[in-house]
Image (cartoon, rainbow, N blue to C red; front, side):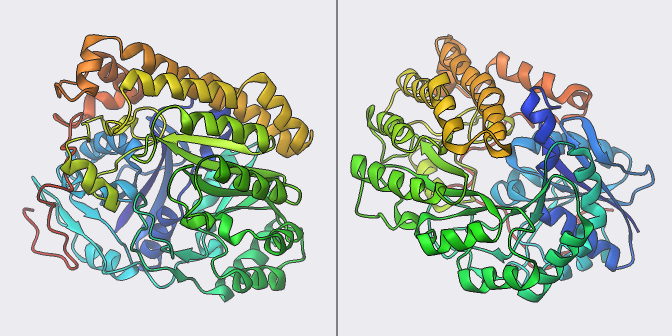
Length: 517
């Protein structure tokens, strides 16, 4: 069969300098894995990387039989529009990725198949007879994550077109484990058993990557928490390649980043590490600070981050605002103090977002009637919070949010960060990111949101008084989708925000007879 795989890297063509240089690095491992599985089953596979309505890399022929989409919720409307276009030509479409796991009931209105957990057998079963399923697609899932995945060596031919478009810096995705040992109730991996992948395959991939010598490249580990089995993974890296011959980026937890581990990571070429702090008043398991909160937690985390940065220059610290444990100005003021105490840390500041049925906390938000039907297009942890804050009014919340963003990315904070990291490649990347991505893009957007909340239609929507989408949000989506707007199916701008609390769609572990042909 003629199979297309589309990895959606963004919901709009890049509109600022940082996005233009970095967008091609948003590739997902599973999209390439599906391409490998399809090709190894004897199908002719083409891979394409899209950003909004713009083709960034790869390409698709016209005579396809089946198209797989990988999508986060923020790119879901792009996926819906593209699916409608393909289906109008008689092509069967399938959706996988985080959006398929978060909103399967909504997605099945626009795809023939919606896939949750995915393994090679499920792909084989679908491609035996991929009949159209309309008006509602089938929601399918394997019983668990696959036990192994095609490594970088097998994925390389499908990844390379995107890497060739990332001309300044190339983040090459690898993954060493699936699931998570933690049970953070806000996370899509809560309750998904942790499982390491085969280290022999990992070592072979590292040797392949080193021999290929892709210029200006970094291995970006996509593990939710890298280093859970620390000695196992670092031992594999040390055995496969000489220390420092490859540069690595990873997301980990503070509890795994003791000084001995940090020194070993630095010795082996880890230059970027991203621990999750999440909140100063809760969610302390991953930092081993469950019983510590407030200013004491700020001091302890800052000490730990400063220790890490003595060995690893780029430390990104992730925080979420709007959690139910937050109240008053303290979460924002404590973040300012953290910026002062850990001047080299790069703060990644996001807002609470409920993604359908992807995390246990979302059920409580929906049952209390606090989740708003904000279009998927804005659900990127940054642009529009879709959960009414428990302890804040909207304008009060955005006043605090704009204030902490302005502080964290002020000229003073940026210059202190540059002095702490040094004037090399790490410092220059942080400088570029802070100015263009954070200050000129995200802070400006939050200030716009604060102003828009004074408009009656916007305020009524975010107060839950109406589900009528404010005209300015529809206009933004139309602008971002460009020519794909004409293919957006009727009703796609709205969705049921209480999908978890309502009746979820049936998730099948094997194919049922197709609804129609």
